[in-house]
Image 1 (tube, rainbow, N blue to C red):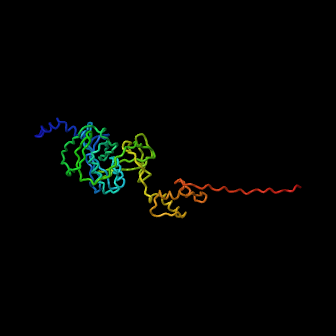
Image 2 (image 1 turned 180 degrees about the vertical axis):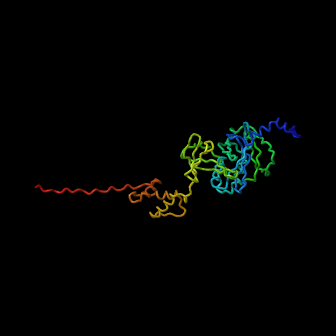
Image 3 (image 1 turned 135 degrees about the vertical axis):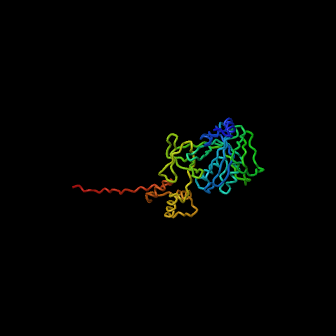
Amino acid sequence: MASEFANRLAKMQENGSWQNAKKLAHGVPSSLYNMQLQGLELKESQNGNLMIAREHVILDGEFQGEVVRDNMNLSNEIGQRFVAQFIEQMGYQVPDDLTQIEDVLTAILNDAPSYTGQVKHSEEGFTNVQIRKLLSAEETPERVVEVPTKPEPAPAVKAPTSKAPTAAPAKPVVAAPAAKPAAKPVQAKKSEPPAPTIVAGGYVSFNADAGDGSTVAIVGKVNSIDGTTVHVENPEDTATEYEVPMEECTPAEAPAVSAEMNPLYDSLQAFCQAQEIATDESDTLESLIVKVKSYKWPADQLTADEVEMLKTIEADFVEAAPVAKPKVVAKAVAKK
């Protein structure tokens, strides 16, 4: 039934906006895109947790100019590892003091870095962007990206600083909200190491839904690889595992284990006390290993558990002295 709005609706149909809106109702398709960072902000999630909100604008292709948004959880250690990995990917040193994180994020945003990003959508409707490679000026598509105007009200933008960097000529320029002046974060541009690979026995990180609109990074050991599916040990319950698509995994370092949580640390402490090797509260697992390995140990005078522990740290053993066999004395026997 026609209404007074029919003509206006027909014009919207003609200009193609309705078709484009239908296509992007659930965001851009899951795929690999050339992207540029245009938003990076520390904020609070709906349940009160701290998270980092990111905005990535697509630089080229069918969806050029579309903005993809995702969040990184900062409220737990696993999420913090993912944030630290992101900072390193952007070419910056991870600060020792977490209170400096906003200054580092501001500096990264002012750089407006470009990269290839893997966009993924979960069944629950969450979106995540995994950064695969930081792009150089030569690799970045040579065009200026104009971010399309959105119908919803734009968020308040902080006043631009006087130290906003000028982008390289070949690098696209995106209108990015400038945050409060950075306090001089330590920047360390590094040469890119050879790309690591995903193998059984190694470690990978991948993102899981935190249930509040943000994502949380999981770092786990790869049990096996079945085609394009990676079976990852659940760090919270080693009797179970995750089945993760290969494209969603990123090679990672084995998570550090504190000395207090390492059973080898307790065993070495007890061994040193029994052997009267001086130790103190400042000793780490590594320092205890060095102290124990500075001696050679007689295996025949230790328990089986102690020998096994020393073998674990590759300690040296003293060869057991050969036991002399009793001499057989020949006795003269008188002939009958």
